[in-house]
Length: 264
Image 1 (cartoon, rainbow, N blue to C red):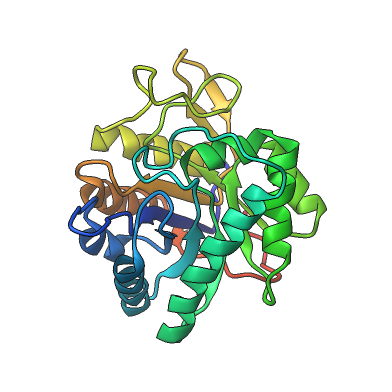
Image 2: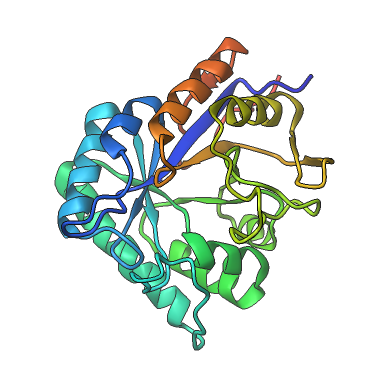
């Protein structure tokens, strides 16, 4: 049985906007090790970003930029047509905004994880992936990339010298090719806490996850993501962490730079 020594638990958060509250970030924060913080394009605003960074600092949680398409109304989950260079500019803009709040709080921006439709697009489109990689490479300090395990973007980023943390989703349905099921498909989002915990343990110990067709799909996981906008996500995060620790897995965020082996 394959059991990693350490595993990251991440959450997409900071997605509230103005008077609209989305997710239970304050309740989730104690149970995760990495916070992927919205940067104002699909969700979040300057006050929410500053607050979320501060809460992450208080809990010792690693901070990542969660850039998306400029699509507040669609929550960044609609595919937008872009001209060459636009995705790189979108990512640079959003990373810069969050990095300013991180530096003001005396903490570091550690990674980048695209959001929603942008995440799915860069995962499989060479031009989009290249623009994301250029944006990350342009920064003064090295940044990790959290990206869908086995994706085109993951391979391209590694080839470009970026350290990639393979991401898996216990609360999302998978297709047999290892891609995420579209949210329009029944079973694409999993709400039952025991099922999510079981899938998380299977990912961590066996390196597979059940697909919608009943098969077990190989998925390498360095971080397990919980979606903060899922109702009851904080309970899901708490129970998932307990289930993983019961299997002897240490929950810890990765850091940019050389890492020791994470498998026994």
